[in-house]
Image (cartoon, rainbow, N blue to C red; front, top):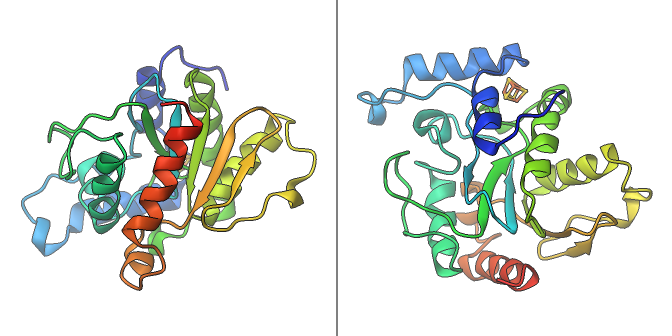
Amino acid sequence: MAGPATLQALNARIVACHLCPRLRAHCTDVARKRRRAFANWEYWGRPVPSFGDPKARVLALGLAPGAHGSNRTGRPFTGDGSGDFLFPVLHAAGFASQLTATSRDDGMELSGLWITSVARCAPPGNKPTPEELRNCAPWLDLEMQLLTELRVVVCLGRIAFDGLLAHESRLGRLPKRTSFVFAHGAEYELPGGLMAIASYHPSLQNTNTGKLTRPMLLKVFKRARKLANL
Ligand code: SF4
């Protein structure tokens, strides 16, 4: 895939992507039916473009948009429970300008951080298929190529962690994948020079049960900040 010159141009291409018929149909269907609480919203309903500081040294890599969160608002982690948990942490760690993320025009600005995901369309049951993840992978490759200041990747969840390892493998930079094991707080120096930190995903399933607490996630992002020399 020939690469666009800027992250903005890349986002424009991502938004127009139709490679996964099942996901495109699901996003459109959710956007048409809507949740009662958001009956007056015009849902985004398309692939969700990434967001943040183009000079970011830290990348937060998530799983996929939420059906009534990013798929509604059009911005990663904006407008759902995961974002309600994540953004106060990003604010406390010095990456986000405000505590809450509610819409694309809420004034949120990120500094030193870029947010993306391994799948960019909301999947049914929050589960993209392996084929859909493979379809979306070239977007991550292009994006990471354009993030020229990148030093640290925070992988939010096991699927994001695997997605980063797959990215390194595609670039021929990961001879032994078995050395990299997902565990919350695990840190790895990747052969290409990037640092990876694994974290549990801030899904409601993890945060409501206490599997992931605010101090645990804050520690991860403060560590990312330190590793990135920010
Ligand atoms: S998940 Fe990725 S590859 Fe699939 S349609 Fe959405 S943007 Fe395209």
